[in-house]
Image 1 (spheres, rainbow, N blue to C red):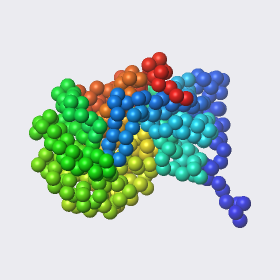
Image 2 (image 1 turned 90 degrees about the vertical axis):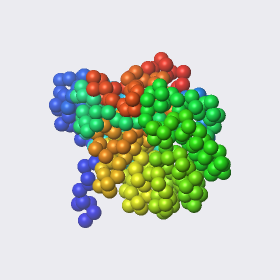
Image 3 (image 1 turned 30 degrees about the vertical axis):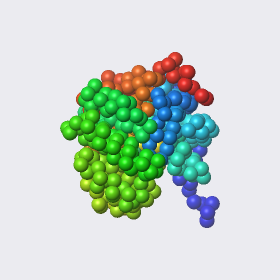
Image 4 (image 1 turned 45 degrees about the vertical axis):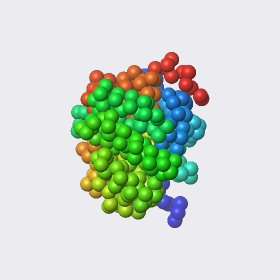
Length: 399
Ligand SMILES: [Mg+2]
């Protein structure tokens, strides 16, 4: 009988009695360590204007929105974030908080599962997954603070240094701006790999794309790896023709030559061009990455910790890639990726993305230095090692 079927514990109201017992005699605000539970979550949305107009092959923007989440438990506060839309804020406040309140802080996977089950009828991909990512990363930060350990140590360090590549090179830049950015990356910061945007106007200006690739190669010289990202702007055969035309500039990485939704097209391009074909930045759940890999669509899987479901799912996505013999590359948000990237064996590198670098240096103490081409998680700071500079951030607050 249906009435006799036992509900899975995750579907029942959370029974926190054993944790309250362990903490008896102690006020909740001072409960710490293994017994700490999630007391509250606060959310603030910031919007940062870009330093100048920006565009890639298929989108133009003038501002970047960041949703910052703080999870409170055990008398400490964990910080996480996502780059998404302001609609994440009420979703976290009105749905996700109810799913995780009173759960043990240390059981991040349990809280993550409770959030994913709670949003079943809302749909996981998109903003919902971005919201979960922000909460998950804040939970990992809080866990690190409660155990007085950096998140990379909680996960287990594989790489002491996490390679990065400079990323920006927007189609809106004139030559002087593009040159200044490329020179900052390769000369001031000594980054050995850089990426520019191509596919301008949905593939409508290939002549300028090729000229900008040649220009970038001239500026960086022959010793630096050159990557390009079309953001899905080309058709299949157009992408192959562009790859052939840019061969003289020794491009190593061709990101989203066609739409990431066109897995067959990605494979077709991949089979015909020399650079590695890559995609995955719009992956919001494990199934997305598994499908992309099963279609043989990419040479390197990109995974975004602010979208995929946070650190908890990023590690799993890396494992799925590893099982197929693929490396992973972290997409954007470099300071949020550094610790988890240090913990997976099949890491290639992280994207040191202009907009996010600017924002993270502006509002966080503890943003990492890329000089020499790698980030090194700070083992002297617990959690993710980031402290919000509230006064500096306040002028960008929108809700
Ligand atoms: Mg991209």
